Length: 302
Length: 302
Image 1 (cartoon, chains in turn blue, purple):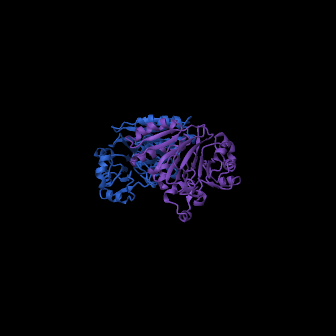
Image 2 (tube, rainbow over the protein chains, first blue to last red):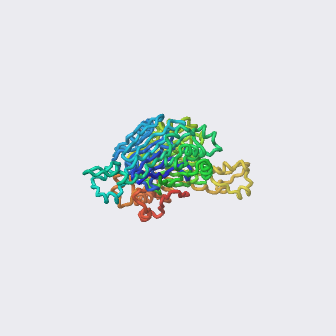
Image 3 (cartoon, one colour):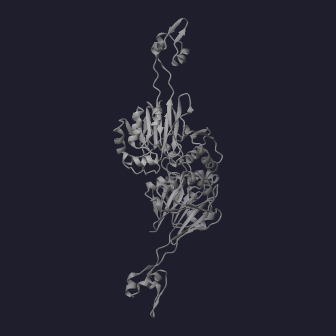
């Protein structure tokens, strides 16, 4: 139960022999959401023992190759594996017209449907919702239209206080109503909800922000997020290059984390010029203490 | 000097956590030729320390995803690395119309040109030639138009016998003519070429045959090839499935190797159903002794 994110790739455009292009998988109460799909994502899913068939929703931040080149291979493999359930892809509208000719050619007689959901780059919107969570876009500032994604668990149900319910001999059929916060009121008896239940576990949240230059406009949307992945392609010594290429430094990522009062910061999307990632941590922690490196294959519980 | 082939991926369509889709790189006297380009090829090139920039020619056997999905990523990376030299791609004509919209979108302002060379599937032809080798297509029998590639070194120059040339005081300017086999004939002196030179090193050859069902039609083209890579997607227990899907078994691959009197056989393109590849060796060696497994990262000198 709860949220966790597994890093499948955390490098920027040019992959290295040790770091793959961007992809992550978010687990939410047994559901799997794929975020970006750089080349090699299907291999990384296998290596990290994520069962392909449980991915029903793929969120693509922007249409640079290092975030999408894994889609044809992943979708092909799903077809070979006999998938029948719809696969939902949330991305800028252009993806559909780029991907469809490839799917038509390479995945003839596909046993399932790829449903494209066009994302608007300039407004923050709920683009996905189920009974457990919702996904909200975060407009970012990159060289091409780009959004981040905020995964937000919905408020959870209160927990039944079994001892108290036994003591008051509350009928079982009342439990769903109690979980929703209702007071017990039957046969002349009134017992307040607080007496019969415990507070719900906190609703958790995860925000993925890549690629983007430093922009304080996103701070309000990120307020109090439990875990923030913010790109940090460069260190401060390349701050000019970061600005020019619409990327961020580790210090800038930490500054956003600090301003938004997030719980924890994950740094990623490292330029392949850096072999040693320790300096990213040092730079970020000078501004925001609870900062970590998104190393491949690692899972962060939220 | 000479030929060698490095295996970047040797699995069939569905990659496993340990085996990548098809790609190989052939080194020929300092030149690099890429054969097929499954997803993740650029990562495998990096892991095997093959310098991207030295690849100028890519040969694609057929347009199934597991043989081409690595092209957009590789070409993107070459563009990011500032390549300027033309890149030649030899493949079925459809590739150009599939790939170009992606290159136009994802690789804007590419600093080099991708030159497509359409391959004919039904005839054996020389499709590439330089002063050292030529590449000849091998029509194969798969579900879609497919060719293999025969890399054949040209006959090499004879070696100068230094001791003899010194003894006869042969002028230096004669050496290139002696290497080409000319007899020495000057100032009334005649010395036969055999007296002044040694036989040339043998011209080597490599044949790549994947994907294909068992077909004896290719035997004549493969006669006496030094190294043959022949797909063996299945073991004999799946011979019916092999026939149905236009693939081969290890025993069939070995039979082709035996009939063509090749020097050595490499087995590859294994179905992901097989974890242990030893049975492929056993099955092949019962028919053709010098058979080997194309394990990833291994290099075979020819």
